[in-house]
Image 1 (spheres, rainbow, N blue to C red):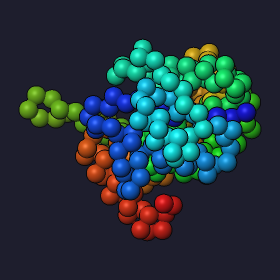
Image 2 (cartoon, rainbow, N blue to C red):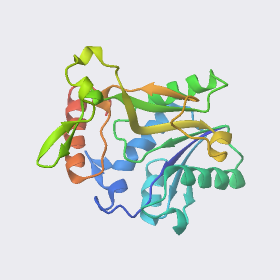
Image 3 (cartoon, rainbow, N blue to C red):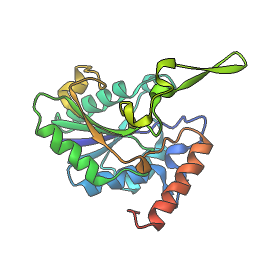
Length: 233
């Protein structure tokens, strides 16, 4: 049994009502729910929330179960893992303990069903691995980063500043879309960013954080351009 868990609390401060705010014509959370449905690998699509409005919108767009999140897991400082563990425990009491659990962020309008299915397939084919999650490449060599120093700047690593980009190791970062894991790994507090996690590499044009209104505007323009260019709606 496989389930998706979409964490979606109601207290977003930088973008009010972010999870249900209209994005290119649909509530933002709708994109994550629809991708999960299209993947065809989930027995249930669970939304963990403290908000009746988010619960209502999520059910309208196809979520199959709402897990009410307690206040202790709904503040600005609570990480994702405790929320997923709470959802797994709640689901196990209501239905049954799932085998694989995929955390899907509610703020991922570029999420593609094919990558979700691929993540599960790769995790199932690698019994020694605990997780499979989305990553993408940095668009600039991080080895040549600079930082502000006084009124000027300085390199983080001066030895790399003269090197060609193609001679530096390509680095990746969390794409912030989905995180497959064995239910037992989530419950055992196994870390995500470790050698027991499979990277599912996404193209950069399908990755955009949405934390500020500037991010929102950029993501919406990117999404509309992507759809106009023939990408999935």
